[in-house]
Amino acid sequence: MARFPELMGRVVVVTGAARGIGEEIARRFVTEGSSVVLADRDQDGAESSARELIDLEGRAIGVGCDVTDRNQVEEMFDVALAEFGSVDVLVNNAGVAIVEPLMEANDDAWDAQMAVNAKGVFLCTQVAARHMRQQGRGRIIVNASGAGRTSPGKVPLGIYAASKHAAVGLTRAFADELAPSGILVNCVCAGIVDTDMWELIDERMTADSGQPAGTARDEAVSTVPLGRIQLPSDVANAVILLASDEASYITGQALSADGGLLKV
Image 1 (cartoon, rainbow, N blue to C red):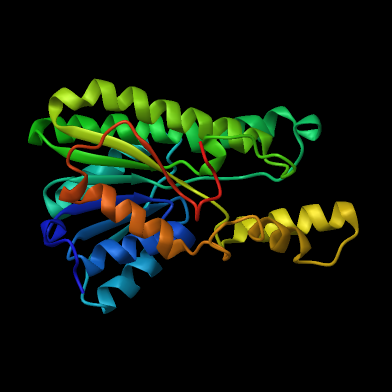
Image 2 (image 1 turned 135 degrees about the vertical axis):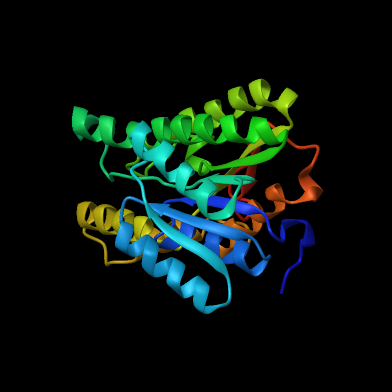
């Protein structure tokens, strides 16, 4: 059931939408009556997820797109415009994480995470904003992670955190530049989300410590004031709020949606 009627008929592009948080964000927009472009470098996965949303009587298409490639990003937005006629909301959700300590990381790990998590935000936001400027309005939302606001601590995600700090910085800078055009730019900083990434983190940390599988994840969740792991739907709820008219005077902000985990 739609909760924000102003999102009915809006055209939304979600990157990294073949699975996980991105797929859930796309699903939530469809329930609001939006038309959704699910973009992912896994084209088969994006198309499969789009078909599921169509089965729910939603308007959706899946598009293959590597967000680190400008030509592919431009082609993806061309497809969105040809199919639906406009682009009203962009959700920069595509992201990668390599679980390893900084002192063990190599150049390839740096380049891969910075390319998707930072350059991908830059390219998609820049191309989307050019179309939105012609409309005189738009919303751009970045899934920046709580790692973009603090150190990862004992969790071996140093480069990932650096790339997400860059995503937060890009959010704030784009917000300043695009405000005169009626385009609002914000990011969501989630906490410990129940996704494949936390399975990888737990696998690495428990292997290093010799503890049973699940120990690292359980210890991390125990620090969350709300007392439970975050669900992809919790992230989607925050994204929907920022896309709605309720957020019409909010821009350049990093919204912590993390169960009270971070106090920054």
